[in-house]
Length: 426
Image (cartoon, rainbow, N blue to C red; front, side, top):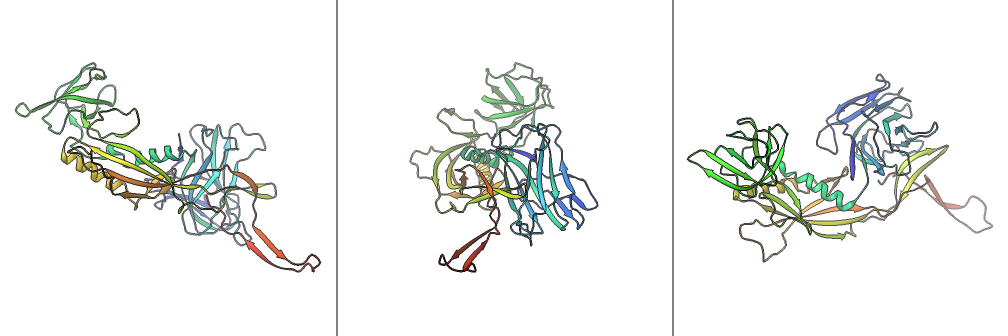
C-alpha cells in the first residue's frame, strides 16, 4: 500500500479554544477532488490552542515512513526571530512512553502560497496512532488552510501506475444508458440474462450486475443473441462464473464496464471488449529535472536544539505508457478515446501521493502491425521522482560564516555570512 489518506480535511477538526482558534471548512484546496480544506484563523491570544482529529480506531502506520500535508498560510515561518515557527504538527500513539512525543515544527517558506510539508516518521513509534493535532506555538495571529493529510511509503513505479489507473478511472465512461433492467428474473447458478433489446452489448463485454440479493456482480459475456422483433437481448455468461444472487425482473440491472488492464507477461491474450490496455514502454532518468540541493524537512525540537532531517535530492525520471483502446463499436471506441484525452493533460497533471506530476501526450510510436479497426494508441509521458537516500537527522544550521585572514590577524576579520531562509525542500 503506497499511501493512505488519514484525513481529507473536508470536515472541521475540533478546536480546544474556539474563541481564539477558529476552524472551518473552506473551498480553497490544492489536492484531492473534494474541493474542501480546513481553514484555521488564530488570534493574538491563541498561544497553546490546538485543533485535533481523533480517528474511530487506532491507525497502524508501521507500513509507512512519511506523513504529508499541504499548507497555505498568511504568515511566513522560517525559525528566525523575525519569522518564528508558530504552528506545530503532532500525533500520539497508544504505546508511547510517558515522555515520548511525536512533534514537528511547520515551516512556511512563502506566505499565501500552497506548500507541501513532508515529515519523516520512519524512526518514530506509529503502530497505533490515536490522534493528530495542530497547535499554536506563539500569540502571532495567522490564517492558514490545511489540505489532505496522508501517509506514504514511496514505490516510484507502483505509485505512478496506480495513480494512472485511478486518473483514467474508465468506469466513469458512458457508453450506453447505464442500468438496463432485466426483462426476466434470474436465479443463483444461471448463466443467462435477458434484457430489453439493446444492440450495444457484444461478446467479450465485461458487465456489472446490480440489484441482486448477493450485491454487485462482475461477469464476462461469452455469447449474445439480439432479437429486435421480440424486443430482447440475451447475454450468455461464462459457465465457470454463474450468477450468485437472486435477480428480480425490472429491479436488477446490467451495465457495460470498461476495465483498465495493465499488460504483463501473463496478461490474458483476449482482453475484455471494451477495455483499455496499458503497457509500460520506457523508464529513463531526466537529468534536466534532477536537482542537486540537499533536501531538508522534519523540523523538530530536541531539548534546546532545533534539528531537521536531510537527504540528497531525489532523482527525476520520465516514464512512458501506451494506452490501447479496444471496443466492438466505433462510437464506443471514440467515447473511450475522448475520455482518456480529457483525463490525461498537462493542465491537470497526475496526482501521485499528494503531489502533481507533469503529464505529456506524445505522438504514437510507429507500428506496422496495428490491427485493422483499432484506433491509434494514446502514448503518455509522466514525470516522477525517486528518493535514493535515507533521512539523517542533524542540527539545523541557520547561519554559516566564512572568514579569511592571516593566522596572526586580529579577531575582527573580513568575512561572509550566509543566512538560510528557505527551510523545506520536501
